[in-house]
Length: 214
Image: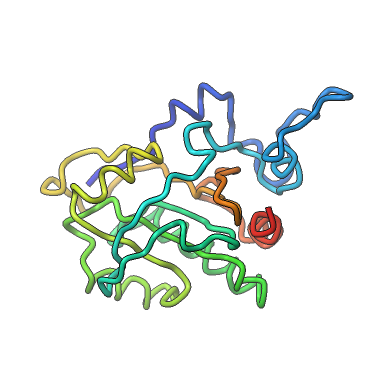
């Protein structure tokens, strides 16, 4: 299955990956009043603003690999890192998960203020058994909610977050090319920032406590 994020909103907003790692945004003009989300963004290590349509993080409910319903809204008061992956991806998805794992390890006790959520982009290939194995292989069991479902169940979530999935589930490929982001959501359910797929764990170690408190 080919999948990628729809980047129109990112391009139209003038965002660029060069904003990562603490630079890339212009200072506000003297006397300018910043919105709360802009004030928070200025304090983060990564400064790629989320597109307007997801600034209030759209809620959803899907099931995990054990069949338990999980809603985004149940993690209020925690920072949420939301990504869209599939478990047989050979490159970008494992990279994202590895960096998230490293960030959790480096956060230590502060990791209790973080919830990682992955939503499947492969309703046929991501099964309870394969997701369970994926989480174990990446040492993310109990650290990441990996949500799955049918095409009909997943499609509304993809659309809410601007995720474009190319090809039908029956046309999956063994190797794929795709772009992916991680959305940074505050403890009050506002999507503030987008992290690129090659995110640095150190960025999250810095940003997660700020997101959780906002």
